[in-house]
Length: 223
Image (cartoon, rainbow, N blue to C red; front, side):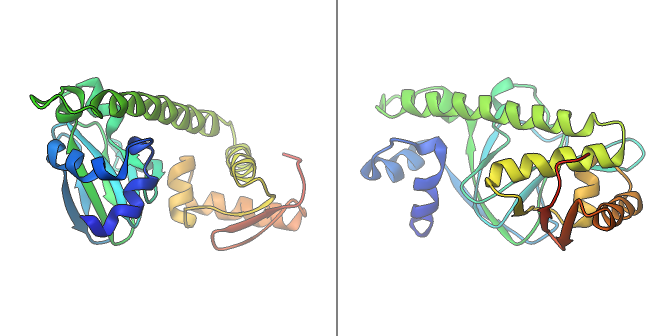
């Protein structure tokens, strides 16, 4: 577990936690580390919604599959980021989504009950961890709000450009790399891959953007 010390220090859940408290805290929480191959399910839809996950290496995707078998990517979770916290804290019982490894990945899982309910040792870091967790849940709600804003577009072009402009703003540059390949981007935008590829081709021809795999450069702010 100590080999992930730098990642854990970068995790916002442990913001302002002193180094000498970090590993004793993880022992108190009963934290466990697990490794997964690309495509493996980390948390399955219908399983108990009680774990807060931290990506130690690799990447994770939160996925919803509807009754027709169509896949929607809700969010991409990168190193030092959390997943599952909103569902676990809401005590909804069962996860309504799948959490999957989008590449070879290691994660730390913590039972949210160990965070929310102080142990008999009355560890001093509990209140700080709960405060950090609440801030992270609020931030995750903003991520899902952004997802709704993107997918509420009426056309593939509108969805794509809304997403790309948001990524450019996040990168503070009109040239940036997104976390999704073409199929994953189509799943995130909730559109057909063929239609997405055709729209990207049109935008290239119109001089609005250039793209190479996951890298995009916006040349115009026209939708």
